[in-house]
Length: 464
Image 1 (cartoon, rainbow, N blue to C red):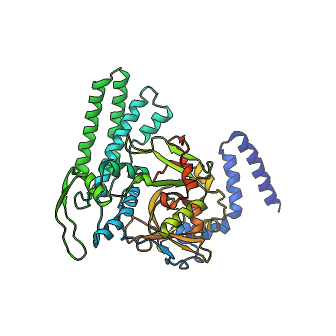
Image 2: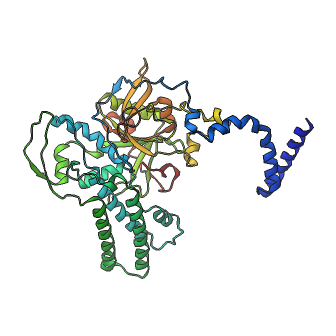
Image 3: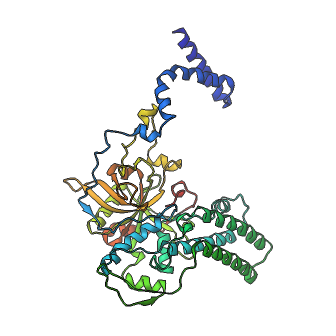
């Protein structure tokens, strides 16, 4: 008893010293070690398990394993799983996977894929141009200025959101995958991203110096043209050169072949989707760190210089669910993005806040709510997928949902992920909905002038 009191007294004194100095000195460390020694015996089994096993296998909640089915009352007719491979192009695959089923049904095809490599090429070219223009815009600021620092810290990535997809298809159209197939580096984007980032940083410094020397007009634009031309050349070496025109014919599932026709990518897009208009789609966000029913815009969160930034209406989760369910009931899947890594049990393809009990395993509480996780960068939207199914109770209230993922059919439940309605509240962030599934009162909220937010905000750090 006296030994325990002595240790408690020493621990209290160490807290006082630590609070005053903030240093982990030897005395403080010795007290911490002594305090832990009182618990060490109980931790032996846990430590042995953790040092030899994946924590997820130890924390897996066996009470929920195998309990979830992948059956749904409402389910959009989709057309199979695609695979983004080792790339950050989930947002691109998701945008295209909304369109694929429409074309497959209309043309009675057995299968069809659009070229993501084609869009990826122009996405990287446009982002390079946006970076160089941003450098010029802030050339008079010092390198440690927050905006300049943001540009140079991460000049280019292959991530994006819905508006990035809309910007690309509106400007560059679409082509079939066979017209511009994937390459090794379109499916494994790390090295291309790194090389372009290094080159852009180099070009950015050069442009700043040119501009600071007072050079403007044609000389400045000529220098920038040489830079963007070099970026184009690098992209061609990695990805191939995009077609400006191609000849194509459809072969349906009965092997009927259409007449060959020559298209530009823009003509192909307009012919196969004459009624598709990206302006009909609105993005909703559930961000409890900000005021609801307000419209927000993220500065420089786009890929095309003259394109649209990411603009969204912030709403409570339940209201977003209403619009999403309306869309699914009418056989239209939705672009959605979430923090997919949280509580993902890949073996069964489920996302459930009860999948892993880390608190019980580690003997510590994790107390942050969604707002706190966002503010501290602990959670954010990291992956886009197709929201395409919902199950409801007898009162038609959602109980679970399903994603079509783009990680191939060997991941999750044959390529799909089923998630609980509670997980939706905690880890779903963005959903894009056709205006025909949104009530007039909510649509009118988009008439507000957007509140401009900086691109480095914690909510947008992962940006997919």
